[in-house]
Length: 602
Ligand code: F6R
Image (cartoon, rainbow, N blue to C red; front, side):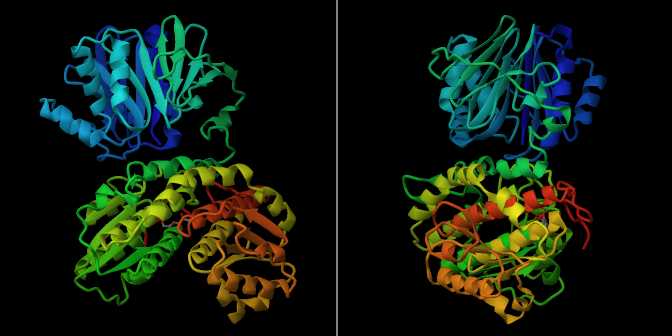
């Protein structure tokens, strides 16, 4: 996730405060960084890559940024690759307005076209750059600085946490909509951060901004108004965080933080991609994709489970699809026809097995698409097409939010292709719109920790599901074994009786994923009864649509929703089961033994 820091009132120390703030935001992951300092004038420095590159550029520069007001940013690419030009802050043509931004401006293309038609030249590929140009135009129309910033904000749609500084202006303007922003209240200075750690070493007194609020930081302190300029009374709270916790925003582990970031990650992944009025999806990145006759997925591990979900979604829409383990694809026969699209599902975009499979697919004459989280990753660069899942960086080795974002992106991908054939996406669009809130509800209400306490120390743990609950069962088991080091297996529910049932005893809890009340759900309930008859404790992950609860010893509930979105909710419960079990066992949750975040060997 991108990070923001801002400060007013630290005089000559401004640059150090901003750079140190950026250092503490490094844990969020980033691929470029920059600073802007005002009064006198406005100095901007930004660099692709590590923060060290920015520090080196500043140390080497004839004009090290100076000033008593500053903002800084660490960028995680969503529009355009990580280059110096795409790094924030972005400035207007006069160099007098500098802007940093987290989030996505959905109507940026229309604004960019409008500004370009007026002769504005753009320096970057980013959505953010429209903002300084809009502020500049409003200043040119005679508005004062605060009104000009408000005027620009009125024009943009989407999610944002934004900070703006102007040349010779001893103020920082800030606003938020669907992206966190918090003020830090010091004795003689005021700070701004996308996250408290950005300024925690200076103050623990904070003011959390709410959506639609606008803040002005100046040498006298701070004030907050609503979007119309009406003052809002905000309370100052004191946070009580240890330094050890700060990089994790108060969570004990990155994995738990990332599980809880999922509603935000999904909002980002859906941003600008749902046309609720028309009941259609609008995935610009798929515009140039010809309609494939059939689809082959190549992927590994968790991403392979997402690919299995993709197969189920596409086949339900009448589109032929298969999933291959990437490590098997590259060296095995996989018939490719003229109209085959090969989709590499890879959050990192750097997994060697998946890259090999994609290269092999290309050599076999297939069109290729990378479904990835990392802008400009190898898969993104090498494939004919790319669809970004926009999860934000994931630090924990065990994939959590990227898996959910992959499922959402695959639902969008399927709907886009199905709509080309006249399918109606209305119900799916409504379900996707509601998904982040449903997921928040699951995370807030989950009893996974109590369920874990009940079954701690069991012999083995089994996970079963049918249809799109099958990849959830596989993923539930993978996450569990990966971080608990306990034996776990995932199965298609109907497969258990073909061998593994021999292992089922009262020492082997079975997690059964049963959402909806269709034939598959009913058949899975039959399989639940089989394990119950062998005394296995049953934990049902269910939306309550069927009567599976009658046969369960414990229930992990999810809201009732669409068949394409239910797996995301059920999976969140199983993520929490794995997390709490690993925590009880004292495992190294963020860095499980023997595993790496990105596997770059075959
Ligand atoms: C498990 C996990 C791995 C990855 C796999 C592929 O939590 O993260 O199974 O899914 O190594 O990685 P990507 O998606 O980067 O290709």
